[in-house]
Structure formats: structure tokens, C-alpha cells
Length: 316
Image (cartoon, rainbow, N blue to C red; front, side, top):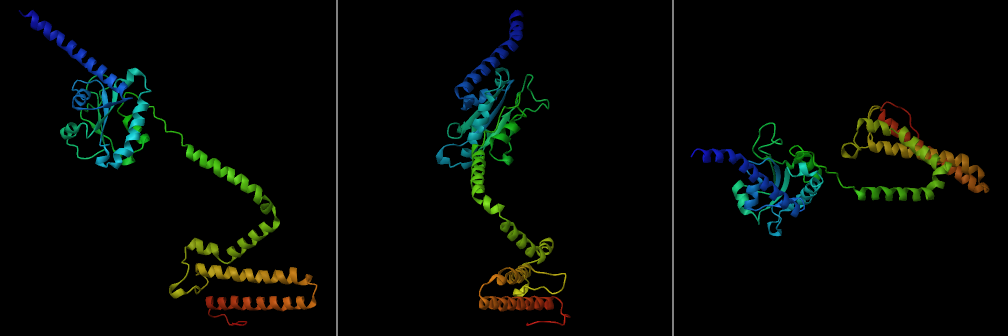
């Protein structure tokens, strides 16, 4: 009489193991049929989260029906599908110890109610409760994925790899747009260079650049940049009193005065002497001397504003 209860007690662990294996085989078939993702209903959810499971599972709770107008759900779903597809590349031994599943609100509303979920998307990772893949910490409750890093596939794969038997072999897709843009810019640059090469090789180009740089720097540009001075003062004032102060607008005016003075001297020395008409030559001499006199007068008047004790002036 005691033999039958004893045999039943001995066979109980074996029956549970067989039942567990059958459940896992069923889940493997569901994953294969869904291209790596198990579509969850009430019964499937109970199978995935069985209390004696030696596998883990990642479940996304979402609402993809257009009537729900869940923008984040639609944005996140391609990333989730990509990570789940990457998991299918793992060898069978490890692949069958972790599953990816999806619970859509309109297809499994009871599951949402059972878990008390009020929003979507939500990702839960249910760890293995038995076997070699059971967490060393002994944790049995689910882990909720943190969307703080956005909805991209890369951070999702990185975080989920902490709970899978082996890391998820996810590789970001090649950004052909970036390479195409770089190639297009390179082609445009090469083509443009062919046309502007004569200009870049001209000594006059570099002479103009050098002169402009010299005018800007000698007018106090770096002084204003280093000190971060304002463009102008209060009430439209553009000349700052004192040697240690200067506005940005003042720099531009001084550079323009230096440029006009330099241009006038160049015209007197390089253009006027080669005029064939005496009348035109005399007119240019008077013109450029007047320009020099007026510009020097303006320059000295600005200097007198900077230094109130300066006693001399020309015209102004």
C-alpha cells in the first residue's frame, strides 16, 4: 500500500521536468513562427512567466492600433524587432533560454489589467527562476527597461544583454546617408577646387587676404575678442574712452580708416605716377592727398576722444 505513494512522490520531479521541457518546446515553436517574437495572449503570458521556468523572457507591452495614437509605441517597435531578430543569430543552446515577446493592448487587455499597466510602451525582463541562468542576486521579480536613453535599438540591446544568457549580437546598421553625404561633399570640393585653383594660386589673392588680416588685427580685433567687450556702448556710443577700453564697432571703424589710408597711399605710389595725362595726374595727386588729410584728421579726432589730454588736431 505504501509503494504507490512512494512511486508517485519519486516520479513527481520527473513529471515536472517533462512539463517544463514541453512548455519550453512550445515557446520555441511560437518564437520561430513569429520571426523571433512571440505574440502574447493570456495563456501564452502564463507559459512565459511560469513559476518553474529555467528561461528568461523580454516582453514589450505596447499599443500599436492607430486608434490608440501611441507615437512612442510606433517609434520604439522597429528597434525592438531589430534586437529580437539579432537574438535569432545566437546558437540554439543559448537562444532557447531567452525569448522575446509582445503584448498588444487591444489583443491582450487582460494582461495589462493583471499587471496594472496604465501606459505604453513598457518593457519587462522576467529572469529565470531555476537552472544555471538564474540571477546570482536571487532576484525573482521582473526588471523594467529604462527609456532614459531613448527608443534606439543600440541602448536596448546593451541593457538587455545584462539579462540574457549571452550578449545580444546587435550591430548598428550602416549609415549610408552619412557616407553618401561625405562622398558628395568631397566631389563638390574637388570640382570647386579645379575652378578656384587659379584664384588660390594668384599672388594678388594672398596679398589681399594678408592686407585685410593685417588691418583687422591692428585695429584691435583680438583685444575685443579676448575681453569679450560689447559691440557698442549705451545710447549708441561706439568709442570707449581710455587706452584699456574698446568697443567692437570701434574696431570696424578703425580698420576702415586704416584701409582708406593704405589705399590712398597705394594710389599715390602705384597708379598716379603712370598716368599719361598731366591733368589727370595732378587731379589724382590732389584727390588722394585730400583723402589722406581727412582720414588722418578723423583718426586723430578719435584718438583725442580716447585721450582727453591730447592737445593737437588737424581738421576736426
